[in-house]
Image (cartoon, rainbow, N blue to C red; front, side, top):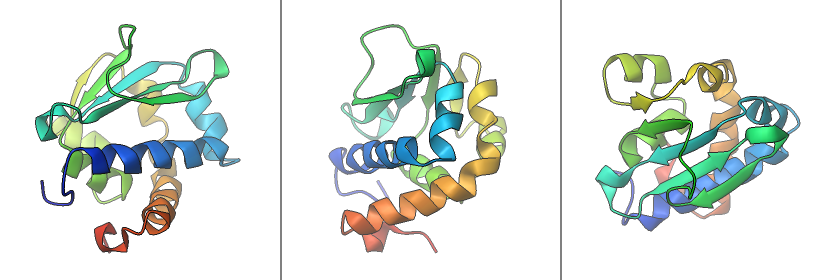
Length: 139
C-alpha cells in the first residue's frame, strides 16, 4: 500500500470520514438520500480492509467489515485509490470507466454525490489532521 502502514489505518480514516460527513448539514442529508446498503470492499489491500454504510430509511449507520445483510451496492477498489477518491484526486466516474473501481449494483444514487466531493475532501482533510496523519494529505 502506498499511503497506509497496515489495513486498519484506511478503515479508521474512512469510518471517521463518514461519521463526520453524517453530521455535516450539507453532506448528511445527501448521504441519507442514497437509501442503500453499500459495502466499500478494499480487501485487495488486506483481508480486513472494508467497511459498510447503511443509508436505508433515512438512517446513517457505519461499520467496519462486510455487512451482515446482502449489500445493494459493492464498490471494490484499493484502499489507496479510495484515499485518492476521498481526497478528490480521483474522479469516481472516470475510475469506474477505467475499472479502477468495480461496481456491483446501481451506483447512480451514490454518484449524485459527486458534485459534493470537494466538501467530502475538505472533511477528509480535517479527519486526517484530527488523526495526526497530516503526512497522508494529498496536496
